[in-house]
Length: 362
Image: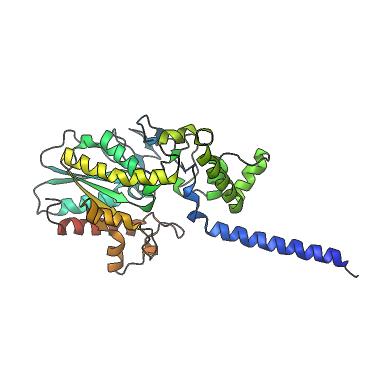
């Protein structure tokens, strides 16, 4: 049977269009993580049993003091950190270290004893050369940026009278404050929620189609997510009072540039706070877990020259030891969360660095 040339041409055109759509979708899906976090609606996937909306201006959310979930896997102390209770005021024979961090420090995937903060504490206290007891407080809160870490330290953790504050820095410390979703608890590990599901649950509806189809496309199409994100960012920059959620406006920043300026400036406030409360302050720069260093050069300039902070660059230490950084990932596609080996190596490197730099610890 002879096929009508017009039908044949139409079939070829449809097939070509389908192939182009398929390849475009695959390309956007593969590169989605490169654009997704610049959106004006940066929602933290949070467990409601652990997090609450904060009443402290600029903090947006915090860990619930006294929370105890998943059969004791997550225990939050009375000051809102994932750690045990500590004496206030600080005992005279104690050298107290606070590690300010995000999910890398919090250690979502492991018991608290297996996080690098507590492994460091164990190593320090096995060293019999010092006549003090070391306490290393895990003050990691998922998705906190530099401003939020400063607010947490100044408003709550300064009560602990730290001798040393270690700031765990990741490139996302420049992002705008995250907003939690208090009524959503994803199954399994909440840090590894599928990107499509993340958007389908949290992103505002923009397109003039019914809710069911909009959520379906949001969940299953990276191209559709990017289109929505781009339109939303444009509208929210033009009219933030209308398009940015109230909870997000409360968090403090209307655009990424404003957030980056504030997060960079806050390190000057850290220095002032350290002088005021007589503690040492250092930076620990955590790389993305790949074998190329894409850490913002500004933070290295800041630590070494501008503010004279002691700075530990983990990337250079890992590479000096011949370590393949991809082998430190908790999951193959993850690029920042340490597996057990990563926590152990970080504790080892941090311990050696502290011992080698005279005057930081006793």
